[in-house]
Image (cartoon, rainbow, N blue to C red):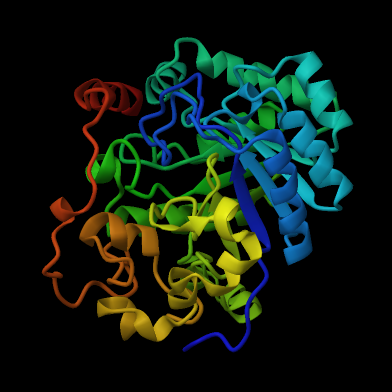
Length: 366
């Protein structure tokens, strides 16, 4: 059903630079070196004004590693001045007491520190930086010392998804405020190689729902998964959104390219050329995502499509068609295998080998 109104972009990610000091195997933006044509300081301030005027409530600063950009604190201050809630995602390398204090001064409400395993060797391998596990833990402590809310960002993949309660206990030990679980979507460096199966994803989501109930008096547990309404009916009845791509969320890359979702690598235009509001309200891809009659296969005929809609990025990663069915859905399995093969989508050769990852995971399971 087509949305009868243009929704507000409630949660927007602005990747201020593609530069990064890590090389994570699941990175959706394939970060490393900065883009040659990243938005200038003036253009970044203008974009933040456009987002505020469009009704954005939460602006997340990402990358790459956002803290590598020298004017990132100016952007954060400006967003705070425009009355938006602000968050920054970091791997923790650049966070010391001085940085934490500066983040507090510019009004950052929360910082997401990525930790993908309680096992230092596995986390460091995933991030491709020696000693990063300890640096991430130290970053959490610095931020908490300054009174900043900290989210532990955890992405379940084939080699770490069973580390669930261990992650929660680690977060409690670090005095973090939230554990935020983000679904791995295979548009990153490793593609479908490290993605969970539909059954593994169902097991994972169900386990995290139980952990939220068990620990809700001690720590907050949240997740980014459009299928949450299938397991938690009250989410669907309250929000009726599911996949937020182009409906409640979007991403602006460092060069101003607008994407309907951080994990869906199909451009909707560039804010330098048409401005954010015009693209949000008129880009054909945005409009298409707001009409769930466009969905195909198991998503198209599903009774939950209005509160879920399947993951459009997963569909695109597997079949090259963002409106195809969701192959990771356990509620309503795919009705047929699409003619478009995953090989037809844009692929990236893994930068590192998967075998050492398997060995680390197997070692930790013992």
